[in-house]
Image (cartoon, rainbow, N blue to C red; front, side, top):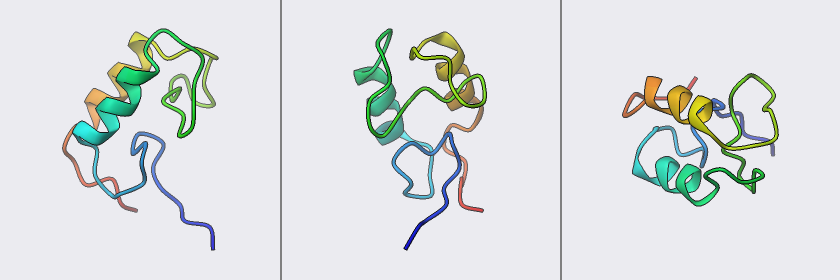
Amino acid sequence: NLVWCAPHDLNCDGNVDFKDFAILGNQWLQDPGFPSADIAPTGGDGIVDFWDLTMLADYWLEDAAP
């Protein structure tokens, strides 16, 4: 079964929190990994950078479930 999660909820647990930040931090200024932290612009741009951090911060500690 496929589960939908918001692009900014990197680990698909329904929250944007330290777990998502850790994923982004581990990929910082690198090619995206899995799960990918390359979330900005929509569809990614091939590197995890300030724009991805900005999008994650916009949803920090909010419920990301649909």
